[in-house]
Length: 469
Image (cartoon, rainbow, N blue to C red):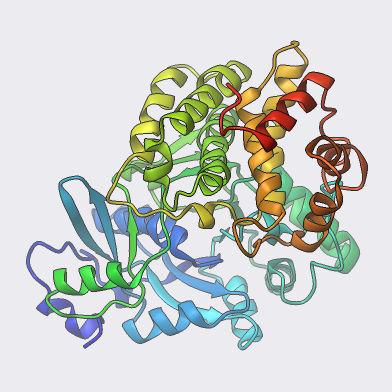
């Protein structure tokens, strides 16, 4: 039997479940990219906010319609379960399970385009949120919108068509909430939307600028890909019920949101989210420290023969590299917010990476490196280079990334895999590969000018031992 509204009553008593009447709630959020991370993070917070149930307007009518742009996989997991799924928080003490009820249904945009547009245009919808990964924003190498990529199956098309209907019906604007790892994600989303509207619906540009907002966010929770073993563990804890949509995560969760909404929103701050005026210090710390170290562990860990994050961080050389990246290379480039302790943050991250109950695969983190390394590594290198400081840990990570591009870890999952692999494999030596990738024909040309010392360090890292520290 599957987890469903009809089987909720049969769950073991220790499994937490929704405290609100799901059928009595309207959909207030449309979310593009309803993968495991969204289910463990934003939908989890929204469920907690509706669980408050004290009569406040922010506690109800925030059900979520999820949208998969192409693949029907998540819809097939969730729709037969009435949108219900389990979040299992794993720690050394075991797993704590909670049934999340905030998702109403999942639409597959390639199969139901009109239904997606209608969901965005519905009067009860106040927020459209996104976890489409960095490549989902369809940017070119200059950071502007690539109109060839932003075709009729991109979120831009569906959001624009929904906004057009809202405008014609005299409905208010909405909040567009990016929850992806892009530096200054709110401003970037706003600029990209305006470029798309300027090309396709120019009469909507002024209305969008005056009636819609794009708050910046910082999101943080480690969510490995769910395995068959995970699903078996959850089924046993649910008394034998199968949950095809369950997600496994850590106990830690953080969500920092710029308080800049076009209309109503859930009371996320009442359940642990931080509503702030400026997200940048938290966002920069997360991108350069957590994400930067995560990518380092992914590429260096794969090169060293490891499979999981906790194995990589248990390797003394890799732990030293990750710690140096966070403490000595990234943290000095960040101006912290009041009360933001970057030293304590680095220590906590090492502890989180070392959690042996989260089998977070390094190859999962290694996906889409071309989209990630500018904000995770190159901005830190540039800030240090301006002060004449080297970044040997990040240089070791770049060397391991080149090793990855050459196919040594198997198939490279990256939108620029063919182009980058050809550059990396054509180079006569590591220094030539770096020059080609960052100063010549690569997608990051001009973003970083490696010095002679950088090239020497990279060559040593590519050809020698794992660490350059």
